Length: 176
Image 1 (cartoon, rainbow, N blue to C red):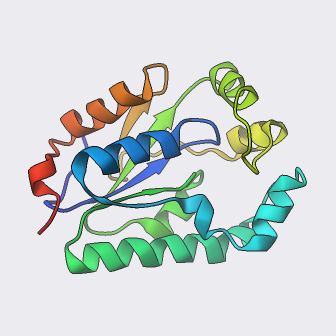
Image 2 (image 1 turned 90 degrees about the horizontal axis):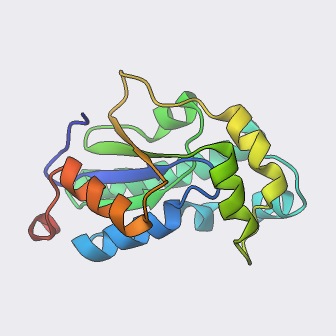
């Protein structure tokens, strides 16, 4: 079970198509917390590369991860809770993001389940063809990381409620 700070920042993580944005939006709305969409923090070059079907390299990801880490630190530093989406596929990426008050929420699903979800998604720059590279890169969180793991087989609303329940979050705790 993850340790939860009074005013945590939740990093909703997982491969593309796992429902990060949907679940994060539901959580932020229910809790009244700030929300940052990690995809919006990608440099234009990264978006263009993914749109062209090219997987990002670690070198491509570092500036993006630093932008997300800055958002997280601004919130944890001021005691302000928040929710941010980020694939955070590798432990070394999560190491950049982690800190006091940060909880990773790992949305897990099978390749088939996620592939079906991606096939029905329209208007996103991440093409379904890159899903395999995401699963290949994925390093599930380990016991030394502050995280909870949830299956994406439930509805996004059920997943959001499970996060609230498991982390004992309350909308009344939304603002310091």
